[in-house]
Amino acid sequence: MTHTATPAAATPPASPAAPPKSRTAERSLARRALARPEIGALVAAVGVYLFFFAVAPTFRQADSFATVLYQASTMGIMALAVSLLMIGGEFDLSAGVAVTSSALAASMLSFQLTTNVWVGVLVALLVSLTVGLINGLLLIKTGLPSFLVSLASFLMLQGANLAITKLLTGNVATDSISDMDGFDQAKSLFAAEIDIFGVDVKITVLWWLLFAAVATWVLLRTKFGNWIFAAGGSKESARAVGVPVNLTKIALFMTVGFAAWFVGMHLLFEYNTVQAGEGVGNEFYYIIAAVIGGCLLTGGYGSAIGAVLGAFIFGMVNQGIVYANWNPDWFKFFVGVMLLLATLVNLWVRRQAARR
Image (cartoon, rainbow, N blue to C red):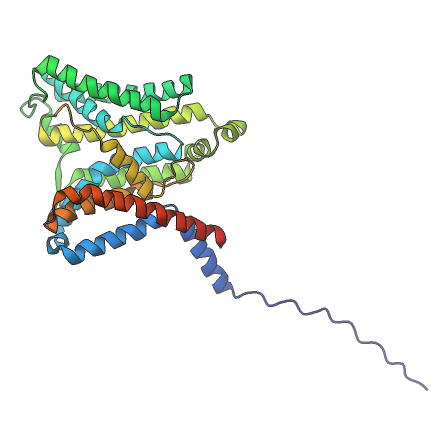
């Protein structure tokens, strides 16, 4: 009897070994980290902090750091609103003088009419929101670039600040309102100091962090946040998928108006009086802080956390130069260096993220 050998069952070719999960997870985590717009600002903030920590002994003290945070907060509140607007693809060159306009409106209305200061505060809010609304409507109705629209608003507000202040007060500064009804209550909201572990911290620091948390939630967790990114990325594509681009841009300009009102109220109740010529040039610092934080000038990219870091860098440099006993005239030089380096770092980070 012959035995027929049955052929062995064909075995499938061995599949290539899958890469270890841990390595894949590490790559994925690194890619997500590099894709974040604020990563460049975080690196810069750490570098600036370590630099002044090393060269300026006063910088290391807790009360000095509280001053740094205060400087960062007054700029940071505005930088948050400006960064949202830039993510939406627009600029507001009137943001700096708009802060002064809101403070002047509240101060002069309260003093001239001898009313409770809260009346001036509320009217100033309406004025600031109206300025933002007008900027947005002009942008939509005329089709002009926001650079030109807001530049016109900047010039008009600057002229009105000086002319109206001189007309009503006979001076370039408002009268003190520190003895008027409601002043103490308003000061406790906009300009109070809070003791935190034995260190006096300005309340604007807490407001700044709160606004940053709200802005981050809006951008990352709400439909309006998606609208902001879409409107800044491509208006035509956003409209094609049903995004209300015009409404979004108007709302963003009004958000800048709200921030200008809030910072203006802080300045008013911190110093009791307002100089009509203040605020000119600050709009560029707000934009620079947003750019350092990762916002693109072309829109559609950026984060609120990046704007916080950008303002924090400003605060550290502004005060760090003083604590190091350097000539404060170097401040703008450092601002230029920071802008250039941050832009280059953000560009490198985005390229690295695209390669992974």
